[in-house]
Length: 111
Length: 113
Image: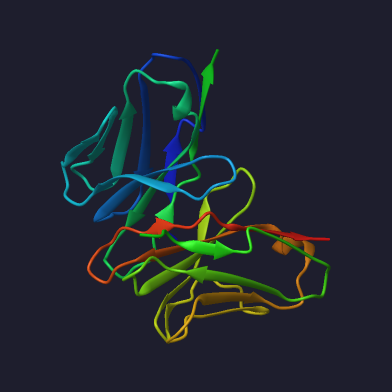
């Protein structure tokens, strides 16, 4: 079946550092989504990407939809403590298809 | 505008009992999705419903699990004769008809004793 591979699985960074994580697939997706999940909560949508090559920002977050439609990355600039959490990428082929989630990248910020 | 509402937030059941998880989508959303999340794992798709219709249930276990989204009222995920392996967080998401994006509730954490 379709799978999304996220890397890295976890990251330990200093506050103020930039963060980069990515998501790859062996098959094409026509929509890429990035979510963040805080402990005990549901995922919250950060960025949605609908076109190959699209680069979209949301504050300190920037995400890109890969040209091949088989990958996407998320960057966070100047990390702050509230960025701690799990970041999930998700892909969808067509509008009424199920969304496939990666296993997440766990971001930790060192004091 | 209230978000996706799930209740209860926590549910404890003994083996063999039934679990009923409820999800009220955001206002104007007619599509509901259910996912299961195990600790340290991503979300696994279970079922996609529109009002009174199951569109895709390819992620649902063949036995003991069922879902509905009636014309009136919340969507219900029902697990009969629960077993320890059913312990997980169950998330509901909703989306409007014209958009792909799904908005998630805070989840129901099911613990089976």
